[in-house]
Image (cartoon, rainbow, N blue to C red):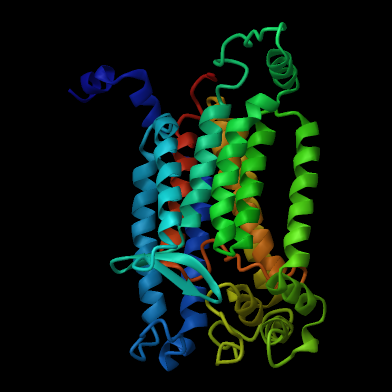
Length: 409
């Protein structure tokens, strides 16, 4: 009966039931496990003293850990459920995910739903759940771009014929020939998403959305000339925002010289450097950090890697960075061996997003980059962010199930 039931399955259903990529899964689970341990170690002091006015921990030192653990369990379940979905369904789902993310980001500005923190309005609270809709927008942009660009050059049909008798027709033909018309839908999506995020004063999310979108466009074969033009425009825009925004200018000044305001904005980067330096080669030991005792702000959030360096030392930090590197390399390997272009583009976008988020976070806590507010994947406290990251890993694993199948467009 089992054999007959298997024969009754369609080819697509049989492909979706293939084995997932165990090396990628093992790396994800290992990083999540280490991240949970570090959240427990880094957060129990601030949870015990109930430092966050927006959160009532009731003096429970395990408050943050228990919440993170609960979301990790939900995220792992979601990862396995999503990994069993035929990833071709993500094509039509991409429009709804992107649309939902735009609606949720707009809710940030609705008083009943919107929540502020750290001088920015980035969160939505629906019932007991508080999250940043921009996290969903990153995935939505990747899915939408991958779904549309996977049809590029193969399913879009013959090029349109424009009338050469009118100025509009000749101009449209010229723009079509250089590839600009093809990029307009993606530009519109980016303008809408980035515009809403800019109103939230969320520069780090803007950078990650741009990087993720650019990676999918690059992998799809868009002309490098457009990247030169787009990169110049984006760089000029970021430079204008940084130099003309008092908040961003202050961040750059503090990054260049944190000791110019050691008791104010420079306090956090200085304490981060102290934590990293205190760890030395082998660290002070797991759970023995001194900086987490009310010295280093955001010790279990954006600056959790500083506690990693202090407790596990340079050796432990290098091992964790190596695990991230292996995860990213494995992700790109899966992208190269995906069954079709959609699977390739989807993995490229998700892997690049994870890699750049890791690079930016570690760069900030070590002082290599100015503060951006980007969290460390699988490590920084944030239940919904962790669950979304694991859902993204489920998409990668879904594509990996069909690696052994013949290539298809």
